[in-house]
Length: 246
Ligand code: SAH
Image 1: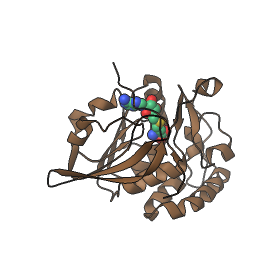
Image 2: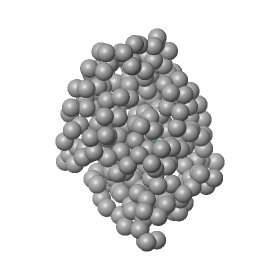
Image 3: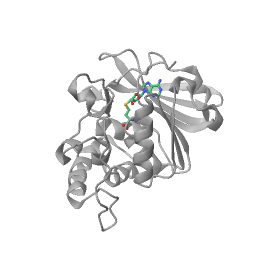
């Protein structure tokens, strides 16, 4: 874990918050690349992923980050910006998390490949795409309806067929599909919602940034074993607040 505070998705205001369109319409590339991807983008990705190696234990996480074209999840991004280790605006005042944070959170989930995963805070759909390569099914909830719709369309266009996107309030979880083997929260609640712990399966892992906005949030990992829940502090982070729906 790096000693500095890591950036999850942060609030943005002003012109940055207005950028909201997607960028998935580039022509399909050859050589096994997804539509809109390119060799140049892949080279930037390889460079980014090389820098993440020290943060991540599971090589499959790095492989997934090599495969998912992050620039297609960031509106009007230049390649260098999409592949810098930084948070970036996705519209509606939200951001896609810093790649290091995505890598650390995904690694912390200890995915084996057969899990059903719940994500709170779909945002661009980037984290969901990464999870979809490492788990069996991904269920993801986004409170901003427009972001949910854009992410659903983008994930479909890119062929991530095992991701299910729903517009709604993550505090309510996804009872129809519970329990989940893994839950990852990508916006910060002041306290961990009990509903989400209730939807975690026996033997499951939940990773969430917890705490009020500012620089005091902690990334926590919860494990449910024998009906008991233990928690572990993975370090300081900065995320947008998880907002209650209506
Ligand atoms: N995982 C995203 C980044 C998350 S940014 C990605 O890979 O791009 C955090 C997201 O959480 C924002 O899109 C925000 O709108 C959403 N969010 C905030 N509160 C929420 C809630 N109560 N339920 C569901 N989503 C919420």
